[in-house]
Figure 1 (cartoon, one colour):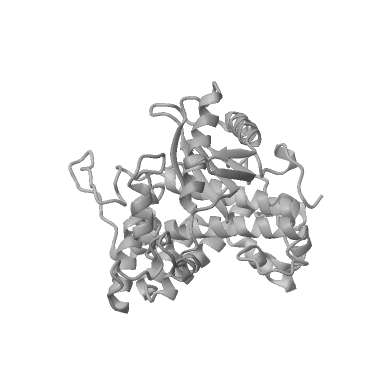
Figure 2 (cartoon, rainbow, N blue to C red):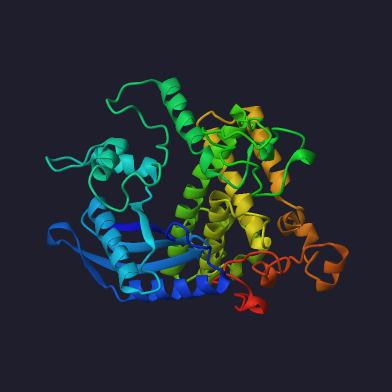
Length: 412
């Protein structure tokens, strides 16, 4: 079987954040380390073949996707986690980094269907929570570091429970993800007058989203998120994982077919949702850059470092992220009016303008692509500028950034 194992690493406690140049260097070291690995010996001497590796480094660590052939999910996770730790150890500059997790991000419904079809004495548990609990019970880099991704509509472990119980269970688990969206407090979801909030990342006191509420300096207790705000925030975290997983699939599809979105015959998860007028330009390189941009943006959402959207590509990533959050909540009957309003308020707070929507309007073809309009406050929309920072204070990942910041555009 082929698996995509996600390895998350982080800097040691007390280390400062990586600047842009250090991120490029760390990325090169990780890529070199993994490229040197063609095969891994898993538990019991089982061979695991490494097919491809994609590395994305952020200010607090990295996310590495490792494509492997392995006899089982557990073998893939264990083997890749071990080799990741070895890659870090062998590099003097990365030796202090820590492997936080090594796990396969499952497409839950398809995987459950596959597991339920399995038989024989060695078949894994059909319930995904039991399977994950069994695997993470042992020692390894993935042990308990990150909460398990919610299981979409999964029944209870004994197979009992009706739809209402399943929905309530799923809702509780999505809400539990809300504290991970630490760059945004409840105010970003309409919890108070927007004029009273700080800038993104300025949360007043730690824990505004989470269960622990530390007293403010004046003795007041920070506001807890409303039910709608909590569910909206958790849905964004959940949607981040789904979006990134499915963008990886889109990249692989374009690579396998050696084509672009406009000419791709296979079904794509998200890249087909980008403005269709540029479909011929959405090739594998573009897709990789867009994926890395999505990883960088959602990382800043969840590590507290987000300040503002960095480029037009990030605006498009956020559009897809919000669509994914809406569709997930709607699918399971959780998109109440107040939750939809909370997501809409979040979008209003994070977007500085909606100029990028012109790209979806054929009647406005060419509008905003004239650089002379920049002085009039119109965001440049030409595809060669999608990964260009809006200004010198904005962040765009070094892998994705356009040529004026050090990289050639796909569509030049």
